[in-house]
Image (tube, rainbow, N blue to C red):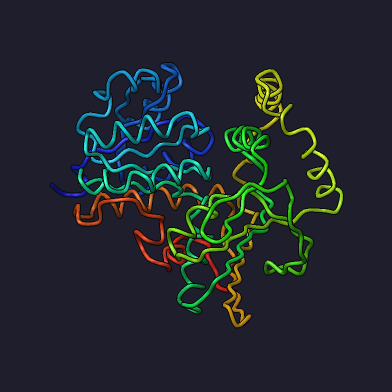
Length: 352
């Protein structure tokens, strides 16, 4: 079966990132099946690109995996992934379909890693995080491991001005009550929000930065086996103070009423950036490793904005995986699947 004959699906195709991915896939000459839970939205998008479609909710998929029958690959773009990934992964394992998504959620990565043996047995690749979360940082982590094989500590970070899509904003709201996350001596531990701060030159000059619970706390460990991992983004002194104050209210932030209120505000106020805005935005990605002798190495790249990386990255990985044999089965991070130079194959990447 040739690459073009293989059937694959984009689930959550009508979301902000989903639509960008559909557009890139069509530009690449691919013909994915578009899917989601809203009949009107899915059918309209499918008609726009003359593509096949399927309409089903995650709850329907949990009852029957028939909705993804004959799919060689499913790309899940329906966040928050805490609500969709487990059902979709299990359906993909049963149907022997490769699974990709664009999550940045630590729990989803850990879930996929725990299913490694099941995926190998079924000849299935599980590779969550094939967007901005976590392709650039995952590749930087892999490069740094090559530069310092005996590294014991890894710090990663990025300086992005892309803003949030509605889906990413909702995921962030869900994560607030969980606090911060770092990896210490091989274990993921919970720490306060903005637990650590330091000055970092991500590539565009030194800035105050703070730790965040980013996906690499999970993925970079599976990729590099470095036992101590932290992820940073820039934050003004005011923002750092505000997050530190929020540590006192974490239990309240998890209440259903509060979560629903915050998510409704996102629906009203948060819109992803338009094409002209995206074109102007670049992201600096940085990493640093240290070993037991306290030697250190740094590595920096400049990449397109997060949304372009997500669309280009998801389509690139899907196309590559559809051309692969099943001998790559199991759980992978993007750089484990396609190499540390994966990010260099996406448009707009520069090594600093």
